[in-house]
Length: 146
Image 1 (cartoon, one colour):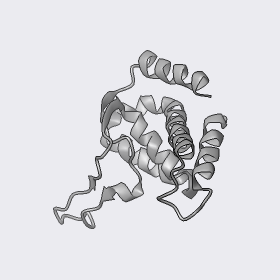
Image 2 (cartoon, rainbow, N blue to C red; image 1 turned 135 degrees about the vertical axis):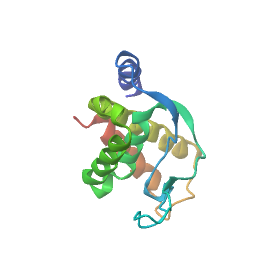
Image 3 (cartoon, rainbow, N blue to C red; image 1 turned 45 degrees about the vertical axis):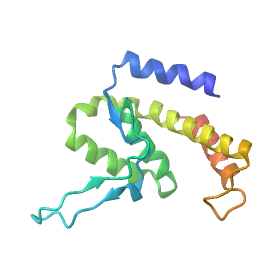
Image 4 (tube, one colour; image 1 turned 120 degrees about the vertical axis):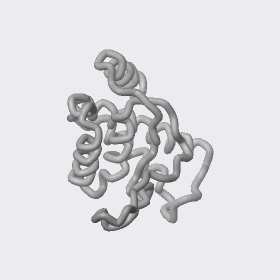
């Protein structure tokens, strides 16, 4: 699976000259500190928990959020993506390639869960099948059309 998707991901980033910068690489809903009601209170929202930053395509953070929030439905990722694009309009035309980066995140998840299964790591979840469930979800995400 990796051999089929990875060249496509690299080609997309290169060929379409996707914006590259420092990315969070694992933003999920619990990774945001919301500063207040946003009505002139001076509080600011923030993306926190920068434990895994790296340099990569900005779309990867949007893809990560889409994968992490997939169980809640696509409207959550759409809301996040629209807000991101409103703050950074130059990413708008690149959103056409978001699905490719979503595949990259599913690929990262597959590697993560495969490694946990291989090493017998079970902590972090009450479910004895959490790693196998995560790997199955990653496979489904990588093989989904769209």
